[in-house]
Length: 572
Image (cartoon, rainbow, N blue to C red; front, side):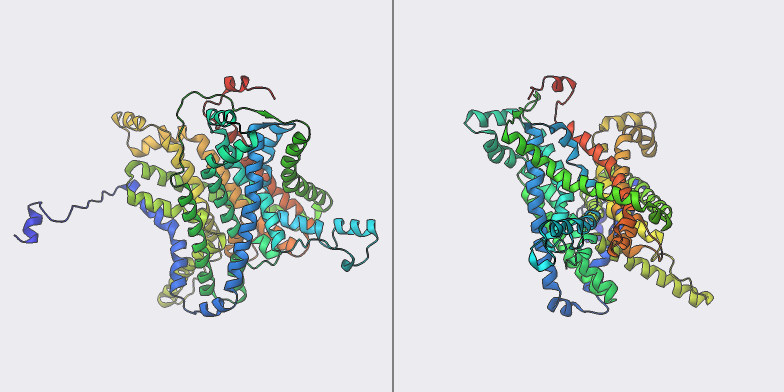
């Protein structure tokens, strides 16, 4: 019997492959493809360059970029691990003066962009800064050769600056993991003769390993994304190299090739994180929860614990905020004259628009995935939300390539058809910046919406359908009201991330268009930090609200946490 006859009889040797498309599935697929275009464009440009300088890059700067980037990642990863896990254990399991204050205060450095803290400490610690001037006056030194002082503008200085503002990622997830651990396991460790410190190293730390690994992965991705700090400190990392090849060498293909190598770094990090978490899942075996035991610290141990928690807050937030506040009081007039209000409106407008679009697209994709599911759709949405793991400089190239191609195509059509030039419609426009923001931070909104929808029982969908409601009506009248807090949280997080974003904004912004981030970067690079301090403080202030939300979330993350549990918590 022929294949055609077999097919007609419905007994084909090949399995039937049906694709049911509706508005939600087609829209989710389309949105995922649109969000994935920048990443795909970078890869295509990297493997098919019009002007190949790869051999030149590989023979000259590439080894330095790789070594410097790896050293920076090692330094930042080590510092954030020590500070993040150590302070998380102290405030969760120990009792000492100021513990409740440090529970949320340790998250405050997250509100300060790495490049802002780099500008502040350079101003304080450089040769002409107040600290070295004070030392010279105190000891009678007159020239630099008479004493040694660490160089802030160095690889080690960059690692320290990033550690101070990135450790909250590790602290956040480590503390949540410690809060969720079983009291029984810790008590068994104590009955076996382990003191609190040995219980930490032998029991609590291994159990928290998956969460710590995720935190470190986020830290290293932020390290790869940083441009302001490494550019100001003249540290040759991949992000700085991409800008150099693109803007100074005027070679987009070379920048795309460097970006593809940086993507490999990101994919390796994601792969290592997944591998580290494989088989490292732990489940609660009881529905009864008691307050975690509090180990009271006294004497020198109490002082050491307080000092260990105070130091990162002091140097990561209080000192930079105080310096910026002092500068702002004395130079706010110069900032206002530099059109501060316009830059603030630009930042708030762009960030609000990007947050609105990211939340809308993230909600649409999460709901489309909920309705149909499937491995293919899930893979596409995951790939589309990969943008958060991709450095801003890489995504900026990915946005420029398709928008420039579309601009050139439209311009060629207008010239051939009407004899006029349409110019650049999308490249170097607000549209390009907004798309870049949405692609970069879509993962934040999509992940939040997916988690929120996952908490809504499918029975509610079934009940709404029996009442004659379609998918759109169910989303509007059932799901969205239940997801209000998640929508607000996702919007705030995206908004603040956009406010702080620097590398993507520098590349994609229109000419003579400034946001608060680009304004601070430009002025601080010209040694005018005081004149831009008010703008820097505005960025910091915008980041404090998410810190408060995150602090409240992790404080109530322990199963069974409630008022009654809090009342029975043992006193220090």
